[in-house]
Structure formats: structure tokens, C-alpha cells
Amino acid sequence: MLWRATVGVAEGRMTLGDLVMINAFMIQLYIPLNFLGVLYREIKQSLTDLDKMFTLMEKEREIADRPDASPLPLSADSTVRFDHVHFAYESTRPILHDVSFEIPAGKTVAVVGPSGSGKSTLARLLYRFYDVQQGRITIAGQDVRDVTQSSVRQAIGIVPQDTVLFNDTVEYNIAYGRPGATRAEVEEAARAARIHDFIASTPKGYHTMVGERGLKLSGGEKQRVAIARTLLKDPPILIFDEATSALDSANERAIQSELKSVAKNKTALVIAHRLSTVVDAHQILVMEAGRIIERGTHQELLALGGRYADMWALQQSAEGEQFTEVMGMEP
Ligand SMILES: Nc1ncnc2c1ncn2[C@@H]1O[C@H](COP(=O)(O)OP(=O)(O)OP(=O)(O)O)[C@@H](O)[C@H]1O
Ligand SMILES: [Mg+2]
Image (cartoon, rainbow, N blue to C red; front, side, top):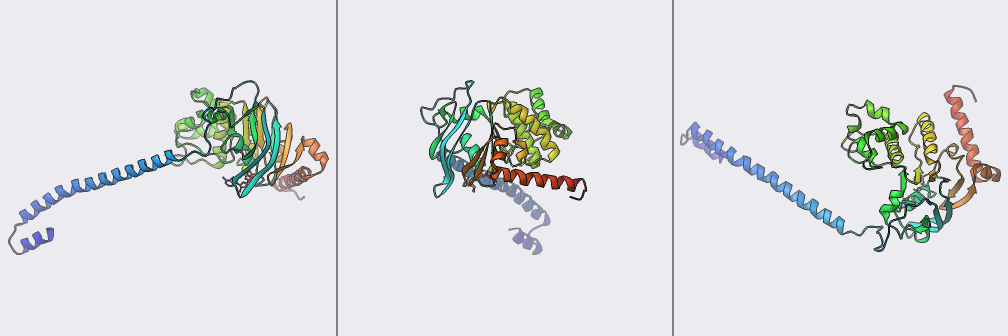
């Protein structure tokens, strides 16, 4: 159209004024059309999102509460028991084989063993991300399948192997452990988890947004936020899954002593790669390929002279080597 008009001007049928006017009309026409296009795309995207949401909502959850599930009574007893537990994520590949152990209320049980032996799986089952196929897991004598998931999760504080944070402020992420906590309580937990100074050094402090769309935290920083969250929640049962694995040794040592004092008198399942962090556990389970192959206190296991004793000797010599390396000494 514009081309024809331009030709018209060239042939003398139209004046330049006509052309400017046509151009103005065209612009007036295009802008709303463009806007309509954007609107159309937005509406279409929203409808697709809604559709996806409804499909998700219709999907059956992997783990659902029984219709008659009652909340776990938060009594003084928080004994955890695994009773002949068999478990597989996929039916073709069993992961746990006949696992039985007890964490008496107020005691700490540590789990050690090679990568892939099923240690984190124990934590996931206790938190009831999955249900066992055979055997049972009980808290205070109640099968976790008979009580509501929310009450089980209320009773447990977990510092997972890899922490996922919400796209929200640091304060929200820590206070999530105990909704309604005051700023002073949040700061106290952050101090104990050795993350307060870092948070305070950011321009927006506790209002700093973290996660995908905010400040990206390092593995160790995320881990410390998760520790602060758990300290604030202060639940009767604790799970630490390699809770300090992403930290440097100075921070690890400092937080380990903090965790130790928190775990005192709590029922705790502690998964650790560094054996020196679990020597005081009331019982240590050594896992291999989904089975508990040894159990006992640190001293008992050393005296047994089995897998644990081997692992201990190996780590001691490795730490010794690192020490001489750091100090610049010849071994
Ligand atoms: N969601 C899953 N689906 C299928 N298989 C899984 C899933 N999660 C873990 N597994 C498998 O279960 C086995 C045990 O995994 P788990 O995470 O319990 O090991 P781990 O002892 O914690 O190891 P690491 O020390 O490396 O953390 C592994 O072989 C793993 O491949
Ligand atoms: Mg693991």
C-alpha cells in the first residue's frame, strides 16, 4: 500500500502531504494490531499454563495420606525404627535389603559406607518421600504410613545432601523452618550456622533474594542456610545427610560442634563421609550395597577389624598426608 502510494507520488497523482497522512494512518493501525498480537500470545500462554496446572493437579501423588490418617502424636517418645525394610525405586532394581535398626529417643545413629550404598535412601524413606515395599518404618511405634505426611515432616528437621532454596529472601528461607519466627531468632540460627556474617555483608542483608532469580549461593552457603533453617525449626528428630560436605575444613569443624550440641538429646540420623565426625555416635551402621554389614560403636567397630576399621585407617592416613602437604613437610 505504501509502495503504491509512493508510486502515486512519483506519478504526480498524490502529494507528499497525502503520503505523510497515509503513513500516520498506517502507524495508528499498526500499533493496536501489534498490541493485539501481544495480548493474543499472553492469553494463549496463560491458557497453556492453566492446562498444565490442571494436568499436574490430576496426577496422583506418589505418596498419599490414607483417608483415615491421623497426625503423629508429638509425645516425648521419638524413637525411630526400621524393621526389615526392603526398598526399590524401580521394581527391577532393589536398593535396600532387609535393613533393620533402631534410633532410641535422644540418641544418635550414624550411617557410613561407599557412594551408592543407600545411605540417603534411608533419609528419604524416613522423611517419607517414598514408601517401603516390605517391612516398616515407625516413629514412636507408629507406622509412618498410618500418620499424615505433614505431621511426620513437622517432627523431622533435615539437612539434605543438596539443598534447594526458594526464590525468596534469605530471611524467608531460614524462617521456613519455623513460620512466625522473629528476626532475632532467625539471626541467632544464622549465627550458629556461620552464615550471618555473609548475609550481613550483602547490600540488602536478610532481604536479599536467593535462588534462580536472585543471589546464587555456593554449595556451602546453601548448606549453611539449610542448617540455620533446621536449627530454627528445632524438631525432635534430626537427619543430617552429609550436612557439612560442601564446607571447608575450618567451617566444617566449627559447624560440627554446633550440630553436635543441637543433636544432644535429639533422635538423630547422621550420614557422614568423614568418619572423624561420627566417632561419638551411639551406634554406627556400615552400609554396603543396600545392606548393613557392620554395626557398633566406634571402638567396637575398630576392635572388629572389618570394613569400618579399614575405612578408618585409610582416612587417618589420608588426613595425615593432607596435613603434611599443607604444612609443606616431607612425609
Ligand atoms: N530417585 C531415584 N530413582 C532411582 N534410583 C535411585 C534414585 N535415587 C537413588 N537411586 C539409586 O539408589 C542407590 C542408592 O542411592 P543413595 O542416594 O541412597 O546412595 P548414597 O549411599 O547416599 O550415596 P552417596 O554417598 O553418593 O550420597 C544408587 O545406586 C542410586 O542410583
Ligand atoms: Mg547420599
